[in-house]
Image (cartoon, rainbow, N blue to C red; front, side, top):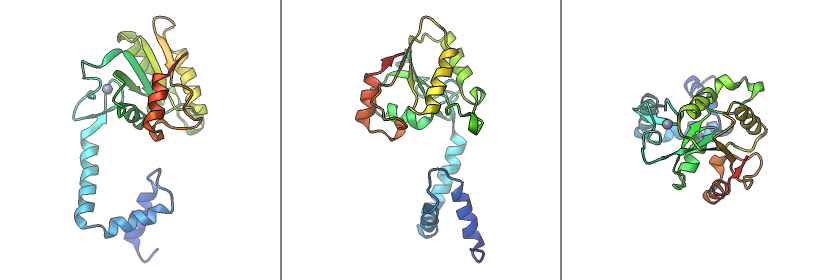
Amino acid sequence: MRDLPSLQALIQQLRHIPYVASKQVYRVALYLLTAPEERSVKLLDAITQARQAVTPCELCGNWAERAVRCTVCSDPKRDESLLCVVEQWPDLYAIERLGEYRGRYHVLGGVLSPLEGVGPDQLRIAGLVSRLAIEPVREVIFAINPTPEGEATMGYIRTKMPSSGIVFSRLASGMPTGSHLAYLDRTTIHRALAGRQLL
Ligand SMILES: [Zn+2]
């Protein structure tokens, strides 16, 4: 593709996007080159806007738009006694979309993965511990995905938690091993949340 250096550069950039299978980058590049110009301008504009306006909530790590805190943390009607711990924003969004959970969240930013260089300091674990010391939380719900890294992360977090006064639970075992919340259907998420088990 040396005769098409600009296209080659575009494909190189697309390859950096996780979740896009390597063969699909050519299709995406084709779309970007042939879509009406207005569309690609709008896409570039939307990326720039979102990067400028959307930042992590200082308290829970959820996304916030032009604010220090997200809409969940700043909503006085949310139940302060329930705290749902998730790995990443898509997991939070999957639960939030159900519209039945009224507690708050804490987004870890991933799971412990020594091989990939992710230790406790790379996650929002210290922030979680300090929240539990000052907020009136009665139940911490681990909505961590059932993977070996997820299990290890949950185990580690529990060793850092206060030993009394707070109940710990996890999503019901209906979640298939290795699955991710963000890809599950609403009914499965509803069942996993409603049937959560105490630890
Ligand atoms: Zn928040």
